[in-house]
Amino acid sequence: MEAVVFDLDQTLVDTLRRFHSLINVALALRGFRPIPWRAFRRMYSKDVLEGALPRGVSAEVWEDFRRWYCSFSHPMDGPIPGARRALESAREAGLARVVTTGRGCPCSEVWAELERYGLADLVDEVYTASERPDGEWHAWSREWMLRRVAEDLGVEPEEMLFVCDYWVDVESARRVGVPAVAVLTGLEPEERLRRFGALEVIEGIWEFPLVLERILRGGGRGP
Image (cartoon, rainbow, N blue to C red; front, side, top):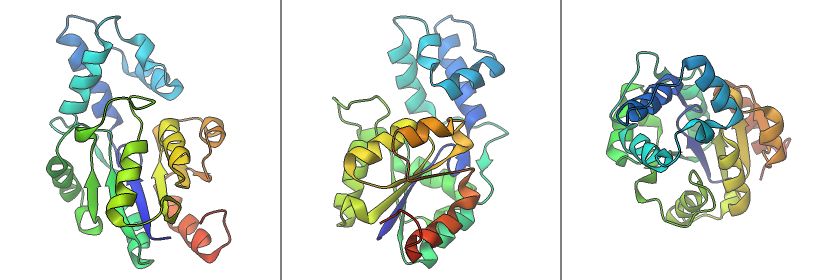
């Protein structure tokens, strides 16, 4: 293994309240009623938020959402417990550490946020969806991004490990040939993550160092 690629939101940092607030801001600007927190959380977990958005404006809402994500913050935003230790464990193993996100903002804004959370010194590279190509199989696909990371690092996809929280992330990794470890802090059902090919499913990023150690020892199903 040569590199660990970490998803950002709901994997390394908890920004779910920001997510909720931003969706409601985008809806309010178009004259629609907000989605209550409990209903949002339920729909987020079931991955049915798209169906809750008014017809004809969902594409606009998501585009605004991507662009604005770095510009907003919420008092409850912050690193998930164990995030720094997870990055440290990859560094101690001599692996490159890459952070990726579906946010459509410049990498510099993500770097600034990582700095605020005390994580930037442990990260080698950041990739965002600001250069997302057309024609991807899913609006939130990371397939193109994982291919670019492998190419930029000069490694084979199977020499990387992707740590993420969403079934689309896991499926993207499977399509590229990158083993994926999924965390449950993104509220995804464990069964769904396993169905789409997660190598392992863990409660949260705080469990990652032990998983990485096991994989590197050859005791897991990793590369």
